[in-house]
Image (cartoon, rainbow, N blue to C red; front, side, top):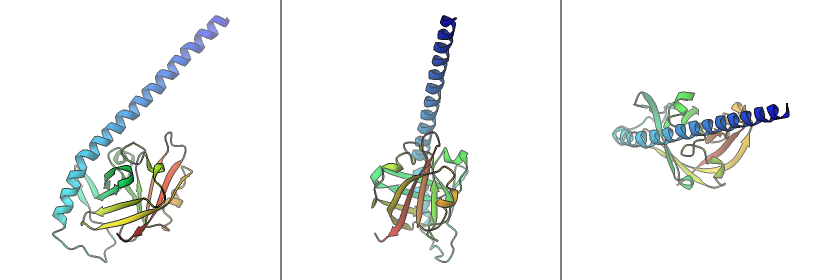
Length: 194
């Protein structure tokens, strides 16, 4: 009987290891696809911004200009020098879009309450927790207007902290889930002069 129990435990262990390895490989494949999407889309976003700079944006309109690329609307791109990232930003979020690029979750650059969400892929927001207080980042909208930000806070919160990320106290908020989705990494920023 002990041999049967031991054999069952060994088989279950092998199945669990195989399952974990399969999940890891699946996540790695998704992360690679997301990185490739960014590499393909970013030049198109930058080109569209260069074309849009021919018109003068309405400074009183709180709506951000959108440009459709590959069937999705984009509102600009985010540069995070300390992480070596330059990421196109989609206009609205859902789980399909998050697999392609970071997304606007709430707000606008024009109303100083922009909230951006992304998966924790290495080349999306996976390294947000590494940012230090005082780190700089730049958001460039589809009108070619750039705004610089400085990191004020970096912390981990509950995965249900929806109201917290949209409270409007900060000019820019970035967030992502930790691996496994047990919590969120939240980065709070304020606009600064260049």
